[in-house]
Image (cartoon, rainbow, N blue to C red; front, side, top):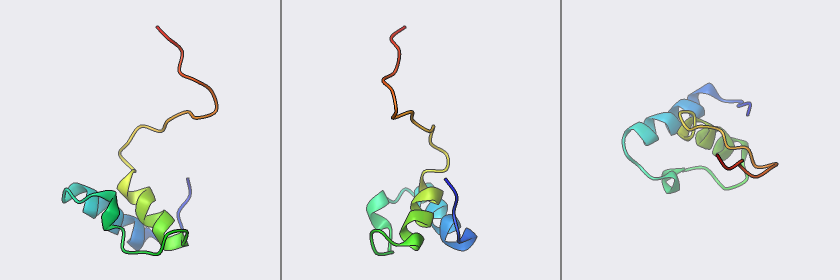
Length: 57
C-alpha cells in the first residue's frame, strides 16, 4: 500500500512500538492521514492474501 505522508506513517509506527493499540489513531476514519497512520502501524506485519483461502499443508 502506498502512503502520502511519511511523517504520519512514522507516527503510526511509533505508536505500535510504544505498545499503543490501533485505536490510538488520532485521524478521522476514512481520511488519507488515517490510512497513512495505519500503514505505519502495520508496516511490520505480514501482508495477508485475502483473494483466496490459505492452502492447507
